[in-house]
Image (cartoon, rainbow, N blue to C red):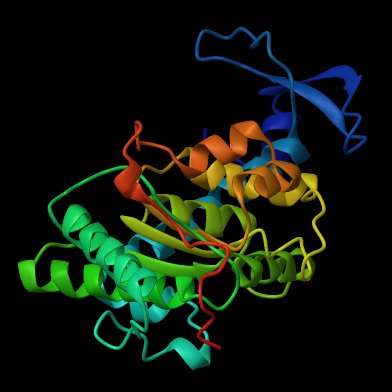
Length: 276
């Protein structure tokens, strides 16, 4: 029956016109005949069926692409991550430690690498004003994890993603600008083993001006964070400021899996020296 055309099934009364019309496509609703010679109680619009089949095909193709990207494991970092040009060479070894606070920040990053390298779970959170080295340390953590699992010969995937660039890339797909759709990005960033989100909050705020994030961005980021338990996040904003941008439920996801573990959070002081 699956090989029969819709026209054939209608002509041979395998599909029965109910007299009702789909409000979306303005097409008839049909009931299909079962093997027992009776008609299903659930009616369907053929255009809706075609649309759903196309959606499933696209979803399946996207999932295969994602599986292929993540199957490359260590190569995922280089092929998917978006790293700013001025930080492409950032590593743990070349992070400048000009004072005690820098040394503490570096030690924090090194502990995070060891923690995740041993299979630890839960998020890691870095907070401080612009220029103190959060992005450098975040990239260094991502690179070190990638190298660690490569040495261990363990198939793990690590992705570094600036949040503002991520939002721009997905929104570009709204008008046919590439395959990095919301569904594709959500699956990819949910299913990778380790995700580093850089400059959270910058996607909606300019300078010191803080405003609430729009509904689409909130939902998109929330769905990613809610589905993960190994994410490294850095931001320029304090908890109070993040609550103004998002809300309590969202901010709680940032410290997901920490369970009061203070060692998973590092906050630069207000007087931290800028490296720019």
